[in-house]
Length: 475
Image (cartoon, rainbow, N blue to C red; front, side, top):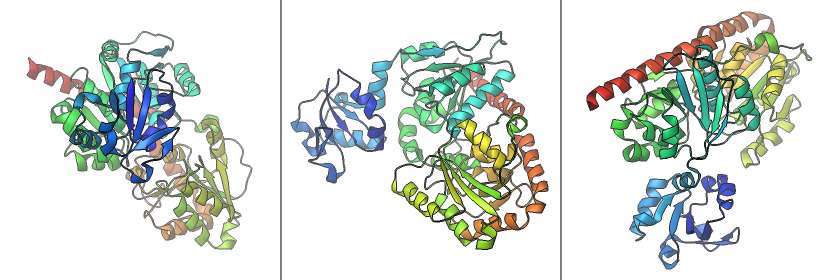
């Protein structure tokens, strides 16, 4: 097929390998709304202005951008026929529809109506995906048969999930599922769809099965929600779905776009690893750690600024660790450069889950300086291990923190507030045991796997009632 690809931003770049793998696809030209790209050659292919598209010979314009609705309208206004416009996700899903690689866990008897499918994004070691894996584990404990489906997956995480009794299905058509995928999904009793970006799955399955849609995102994607809602989703479809958020942060954000879209919070649970993980400390200093990929949202620059303001003599009794992927973008490189100028700061880089769990033995305080964050798993892990938590007030974790009792809350974007809290911890290291104990109690009250399983079943029961009600109306 001869095609023009419209959109050369991150969406295109992240799918470039897949695009190049399609032997039947002949790319005649690229196009983009960025004037600075016009006339350039990318990968040997010319970038043309949108108003020159009608001069080209092609079968389809493939939209390789998240701004699907706006670009589609633009192309229609240019005179390109609707039948010749297709979104990349739809095009790709048509190619791979029916492809399914299943990694089976040991089959065991389960109770009737307890065959659950969890649909998630690519299986990698990120917060949203781990929450889905932990959901599967919690449901297994309650007698459910669990399958976790995703478009791609890290083989290590896939094998770990299978060992935990969760069947994994790699289904590359997700989230743009077609009739073959829906036919496969028919075997399940209830479906849990993880993250905002799976809204196409929600649209396709609304009314088909009892459906829970679990929202995690605190930023990104919401600007596109309204166009998807008015197009593929619609209020009628959403009314058939039990929509819940991992914390009040994404709940309020979702509802600012779709009024009264989310009524319930479903926070995750995490396995209790404190007894098996803790090792002997190898430092006498108080260790503060910020854990997660280095980026603007996580507030690494605020963390560095706060460290600089701590009195030098006090900093000598502490270490400050930056744990996470150092991307090649300007922000992360700048953070690394600033960190190297501070003798007490260590940039440890990206670590495996096992390595991070080992590092917790030497960490006293976990810091979240985030500008916006739903419910970071690192802070929940900190409470599970009985660590001191310092968290910004625009992070979902604050719903569970009582300032000075089981952790500390700091004003977002305020490095003064953060450094003062860190200084207090350094000065009062002999008064931290009670805060650590209370942090652990908070984990036990809200975030155990047993509590998670109970909350999941509550959401499932609401979804079943909505399905039953809708079926009754249809009859």
